[in-house]
Length: 137
Image 1 (cartoon, rainbow, N blue to C red):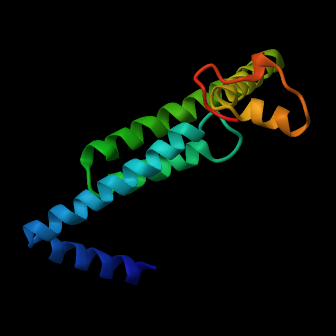
Image 2: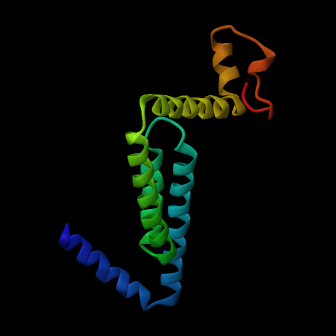
Image 3: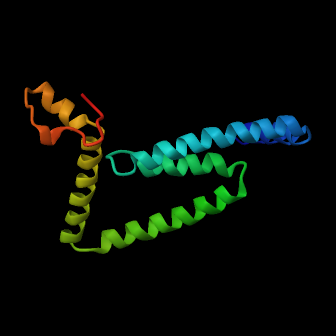
C-alpha cells in the first residue's frame, strides 16, 4: 500500500507542474467529492452509512482542498463529541432521538411520495398520504 501511495504521490506531483492538467484534476476531484458529500447529507437521517458517506466525501475533497481538510477535522470532532454526549444520556433521551429520526425519515418519504406509493401497493388510498409537493404515484 505504501508503494501505491508513493507512486500516486509522484504522479500527482507531475500533474502539478502542468497547469491545465492540474486544474482539470482538481475540478474532477471537486465535482466527484461534492457529489459524494451531497449523497451523504441526504442519507444522514436514514438508517445506514449517511455520516460515513459525508466523511468520505469530505476526505475526497480534502485530498485537494485545504478548506475541506479543516471542515473534515471540525465535523469529525463535533460528530464524535455529539455521539459521546448522546451515549451518556438516559434511555428516554435516546428514545426521543430515535423517534425524532424516525419522524424525519417518514416526513421525507411522505414528501417524496413514497408513502402514497407504498400504500397503493397494499390497496390503501387516502388523500392524506399524497405528497403535498406532488411527487410520487
